[in-house]
Image 1 (spheres, helix red, strand yellow):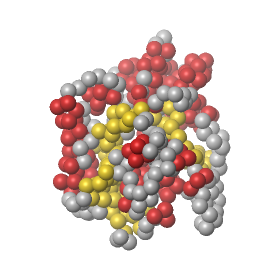
Image 2 (cartoon, rainbow, N blue to C red; image 1 turned 120 degrees about the horizontal axis):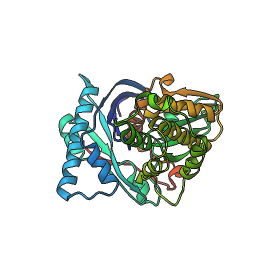
Image 3 (cartoon, rainbow, N blue to C red; image 1 turned 30 degrees about the horizontal axis):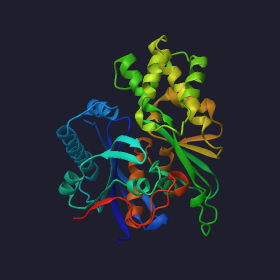
Image 4 (cartoon, rainbow, N blue to C red; image 1 turned 60 degrees about the vertical axis):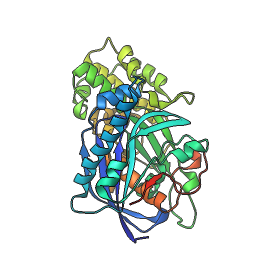
Length: 359
């Protein structure tokens, strides 16, 4: 094993607003690796509307599905090439585009072969299927990466991802390196987030998203509606988060409000839901595209006590946390460490996760 590995992590989230790629320099092996972000890039996601429709159950032919998978691989090549520049990768880690997540069924659509052919290095994808095959949920995947990136010897931290869906990782302190605190990590999915806000922006503003939450900031929150929607949005362990039908609820329930009031109320409802599900901690680390939405962050801060930081404070741009996280997961899988945590995904796995393409 090389003492230093150059690994590219890629992420296309449930918001389907683009493909993120992050090149990281990984020092060492195992859970004590040190990670340095070298470069990152984002590209737009073609066929986003068609992929959203497919995710929501609109039928497509086998030929079209296969075409979309290949195109996703090709679009990832563009993001990866922009990220690499003149560097070469030892490993590329692909998440793919989630079009179904209803355990034990899950589908991260992508053909990894265009990537393998273009860059001539090892490629790993499908990191969650071993967990699913052994009775687990296969999600969320990032908690072990969060441990590597954000743990601290002196304080507890809760890492919150404000993506298409919101999820969290609660990290214990790491004061005594001789004690394995991995089993004390908790986390899970919470609720739809940007998926709802982006849908409302498309329907009410005619834009792909509410940039920086500017429209929502000018709207008045309907406290009663926000509380009611928050209660409905709280996690229901009998249904999958992967359906995205929450966006339709908000559209229907907030139909009588002005566009700006609708977006402001949705931000507050989502922030209420997320904060109500988080454990107490010394600090909260925010990442994901939702961190750019100032209305969402304002509501989040009003419902969450303690210090709130963005992942940028740790050298990881908030919109790149998942891409960096997947690079970390790829490094751990490369070292033979199971990347899912039994306490979080519900299954015990052994061996090397993922599907690998070797040069």
